Image (cartoon, rainbow, N blue to C red):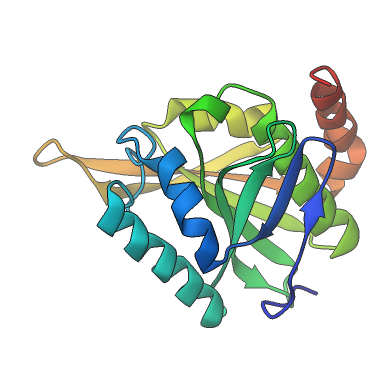
Length: 200
């Protein structure tokens, strides 16, 4: 069972995930201050004031037991690399979602995302016994879609016209993906672990 009050600390050889705290703001701001990182986010995080509000809002969402923000630390570089969140938690139905994920530009294109997802999947499926993890990605965010599929997630549908577009009269679909506990146990865990070891 997932508890918003608990201070979860998740790690493997590559990455460590810990709850977001106010004192993380300064270091996170310096690696997040790129327009490209925030391109597909509905939340505004680019610029000092926007980022301060973003962090404050993330912390408030945990207080309200709506979202659980985690800081991503690259243990090889011994530096904070980005953030992710757990949300839409249903302990009764054993469903949960992972999202709002970003990493700094110098950490992109590495195995950090795979290592991050592995430790989250292991925690949620093996320890907390959730049955389903869901994801949602903008149809325009091709890079994230490929990353999700590379860690074993499957496309299951879309939310049509969910987001506004910069192009007048056009809306953007959200692609829905998921990973099930039986898929994790049947081979995704083994395959993902193998991909991570290839980088060690």
